[in-house]
Image (cartoon, rainbow, N blue to C red; front, top):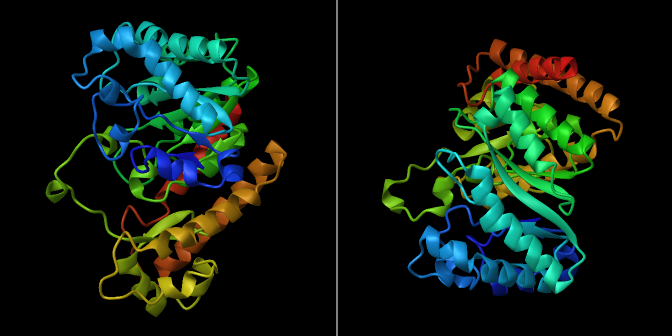
Amino acid sequence: MIFSPVNDGPDRIMDVESSIRANSFFDPQFYIPASSRGKLPDYPFFPSTALPDYNTSDFETACWDIARACVEWQAKGNFSHIVIPTRYYDDLPSDYVGQISSCYIEPFLSAIEETGISKSILLTVIVKSVQVSDEENRNYLLNWLTSYENINGIYIIFENTMTGKQIKDPMYLAHCLYFIKVLKDNGLSVHIGYNNTEGLLYSLAGPDSISMGSYENLRKFNPSRFIEQDPQTKKQPNPRLYSGLLFQWIELNYIKAIQQLYPSWKILFENSRYTPLNFRPKEDWNLRQPELYKHFFIVFSKQAQELPENLIERGNYLRESIQRARQAFIEVDRSGVVLDDNSDGSHLSAWLTAMNIYASL
């Protein structure tokens, strides 16, 4: 698990069974350091808590004490790693590397050394689209990330600003795979946060873990998750049900149509102990219905576990699975069910093309 302080306070996280914490890590979520969203203020080391009148110049002085408190809390929780946080920028400043190094990396590495903690160290990095797609920006970032001898791994968050539920840019996906591979080739562990189904594609580069987000704001990074918002102005997405065969979340409005028009509809939705509940939606069915996500966790984790260990075999296996999904979408379409762009299989051709591009890099 990746523990989220914006959602859960320190007491609740510490109440989680120790064996689970030991196989999980804590994301400090300093992304918007002036934020007071959710449970973040409950952590004394969160920047806006330690500095009630938060400003950047004061943080540059206080960051050493904040780092030490955050490191000590993570050590107390006996998590699998000590995570160095980062902050989010809408637009990267010209001295981005210098700011992150001086305010986050150096204070945290110093705190870890002073406290004598021997756990593996993960550095959080948010990778913007331009840092993936542009070769000069990509190489600069990779050179920086691989320059720290004391950092064992990267907690990487690919920030894409593309519209739609799924990523459909094959060049972007291929370069994400290349980015992961370079980090792995340099001996770093790689843990990828905020994934949708493309996490299975990213597995082709051999990362150590891929996250499986439940709600949509956990499947795609958005800084708004860490900013106070008026709930009345927030538009809620329509509920969706995950199909492992299709590598897609299908909007629930289409489920009855699929049942009525596609005779083999049962093959599209894998069995789990929550499946019957998913197919008997109540009148008040909504996107927070827990069965939708519990079903997804079971199905998606099984998909991940079935991936072959050998990366070449994994690629062949995933390619065959994608082709089966594409054929299933063709059959559904022929039955008369015309799915929208966020429920159809248009992302799968991008996956296959990305695999071919990645193989050529």
